Amino acid sequence: MIRKTDDIIIRTVARILVPFIQIYALYVIMHGHYSPGGGFQGGVILGASIILLLITHGLVETTKKISERAIAIFSSIGVFIYAGIGVLCLLLYGNFLDYSKLSVILNVTPAEARSMGILGVEIGVSFTVMAIMISIFISISTTEDHSKYDKEHY
Amino acid sequence: MKIVNLILVLCIGGFLIYGTLDMPGWGDPDSPASKHVSPRYIQKTIEETATPNMVTSILADYRGYDTMGETTVIFTAGMACILLLHGSIRKNRND
Image (cartoon, rainbow over all chains, first blue to last red; front, side):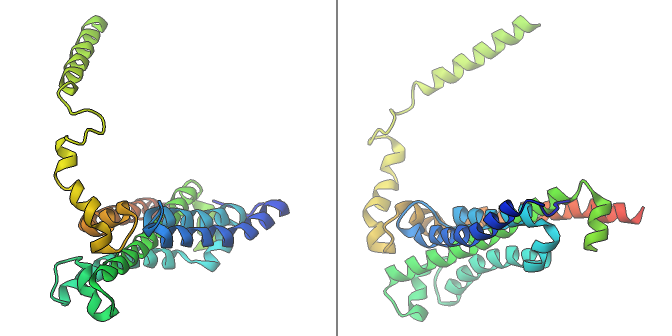
């Protein structure tokens, strides 16, 4: 069971840091086209920001902000976005994951449509990685102490 | 018995090192790996995908199907983790 820390310094610093970590994560995801980075790395950083919140503010307070049901839905949405973009290309008379066919709906050149397709796919990957990181952390940290978890959570 | 093990390990290690002698040099432009698809990616990435980072365009576009598999693997691993660990909680509650 992850409890809330009593140290006000740790709690305050964590609360100030979390938005900046999340902005950096978005930067890593969006800047994957120009520098090292992308969905996997950005997703892990996003997950790390929530894990920091879990360590400092405890499970109960964090799951009020992002519930475990929401985390499970997020992890499925990521794969759904990825596969959905692939199926969308199929529907536009292309091959599976042939992003250049998206140029019809995005109204750009095929090369730019492929760039956009890469971005969409990276966003899907980052959703899944973020949600899975958080859910694995929650699962592992709550299994040791079943009784506490039941009382406070169920 | 330990001596036999040592001889076996040395023999297998020797064979593996012998196997690497035939491999192309480090970063050799004439190696089969650098001659097959790499030049095409290097020359056509900007033209075809408008993405300056070649690694990203290969990861998510040219090898997009592979990356979808990777994402699914992560998703499956997480789901397995949730099922196994949360299952133990539920079992504990029924006791």
